Image 1: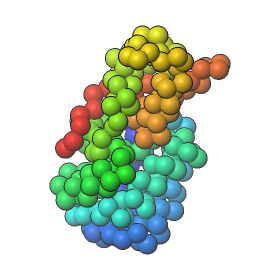
Image 2 (image 1 turned 45 degrees about the vertical axis):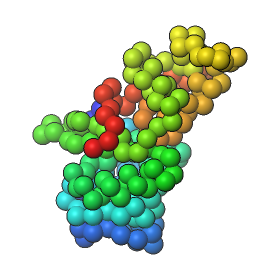
Image 3 (image 1 turned 90 degrees about the horizontal axis):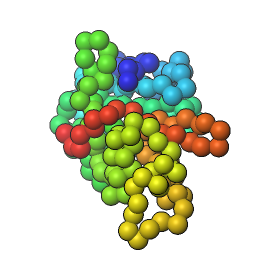
Image 4 (image 1 turned 135 degrees about the vertical axis):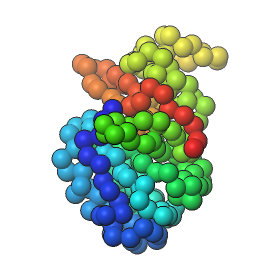
Length: 195
């Protein structure tokens, strides 16, 4: 998936070090403004590659908040571009504390996202749902319920539906509605875990 917009964080913020909850909250409206032209189901790339450090508190109050805004209010997805080990360690520590996962990657000369990876982790059942959607390419909860039986058996597809919704909230799968069903497909087919 190619991003509709790429935000140069260092240029927009004006500093190579991004720290503090208050500064992060103040920066969030600028990020949202940068995403105004991202279409429904589009992808925004947040580029940290020119920064020296993004702290966990700044990440939480601005960049996680942007992901949540995109998923809950504006229907877009976010990928973070970062090569800085200290920033990735800050985000990983935060993700582990709150049981969340964030989608990172790099970008090639054609503007395509390459080498996507997760910082943080998924619960085992969410990981199983993501693997199943990757395997099938696209699926709804009823398909996963029928195709991937569990022990003990589930009585309805509601558990699969909850797992898929959680993956969508984390920005890891796209969803589309067809009649009364929601279908999900992966944002990226191959997502590594960890840096």
